[in-house]
Image 1 (cartoon, one colour):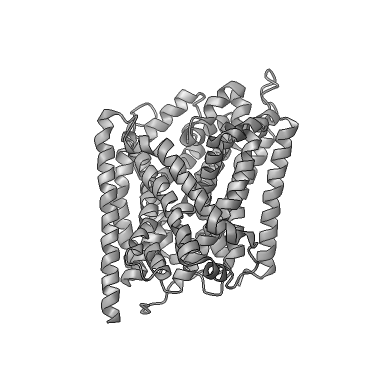
Image 2 (cartoon, chains in turn blue, yellow):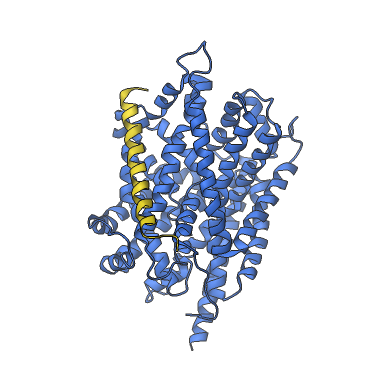
Length: 519
Length: 34
């Protein structure tokens, strides 16, 4: 143990629950979930969804909370140190832990930029900048102009997007600068209730829409909900639907990133992880299934009808959030206010996630190099500010998609698989079971001993294998990438390798220093 | 929305609201706010 400075800690139990829930609740809860459910069996999608929650999501949540608190006991807040604490005899395991810093860092690079769009659109909603746009192509042009992909009557460059990015970036750094208790916990304690208030207002507005066009009585809210919830049991025979449900659970809970490990490392040894982890997961589900399931798709159905909704549901997260939703809200009274509520809700969901993505890198510098928080945040700010420019200026070249694939998909599933094996098989299920229950306010059902040891890793191997063959191989071999963009994708990959190697070298230096101190 | 849709909607809502109430009930019951 280094022991030269006291580690930060959470101020209250509600603080860490809100922070983990805030990290998990993101744009995907309101945009990805309803689109996936509507396209994969409607109400029947909830069967594989809840099965995945029980067999994959909740076990992984408990594994990460427990590993994090365990590592925190050795003053390690990130995966290299935590993995090393679990398997001291293996000198390579700490390098697998690099993924737990690399992943969130890479996601932060593009996520903070997308978060800036939500802040920008909040301002545009209030000022009525897109108020006159009434069709999909107009709103799409507005988005492309804002992103700097085209110059048009709405925007003649990246200036506005860059300005909102700088504001968002400073806000993130400001929160992280004030630490766990004074920054992240304080933010999440007001942002999360506000997010739910905004979500409930929007949900009630959508549910009371009725049939706004008297000439089209079938375009009503009941049928809109039906589009999302009417079960199609034949979908359950498709492996793809089960895989989509497992993927949704995986991505929605923020597991496999390394963020929960870091957050839980600031707990004390006697703090509960069982009930807190379950509470954070259920708060995320509340935002996803109840709020997320009642806003975007039903509202779009009411205004665009049963034919267009099919293509809208498949149009992707950005189209749903930044094209369809503002068009829908523009048709309602108080459009400015409702538009602001929608985009600021997304901004709150975004900032509570992005600060969590920044924390592992900052904690790594603090814990392993024994430097002050201010210095660590300064280094993080400088490095990520430079790296974010790749996402800003090369968005149209596919750089964000590439970063999302490696940081937000590939390494995420790999990392979750590694930590599950470490926890259940290396640490040992008996030790793991004792560790989970230290200070626990409730017992984990005994069946989870079996689930965590056999079912969760098997589930993860299946996801890894099937995704690798069906979806990842074409991406790895750049299938479908325009020839003029291939150099940018290759450049991004080289950049990612360099980031990974730099982090691995830093781990090596930190352990060397640690060894010298012990000697 | 057909009957199956309503059943799935209310079942999903019921499970999640039940879980949230159970968890927060236990958390606040244990004086979570130190």
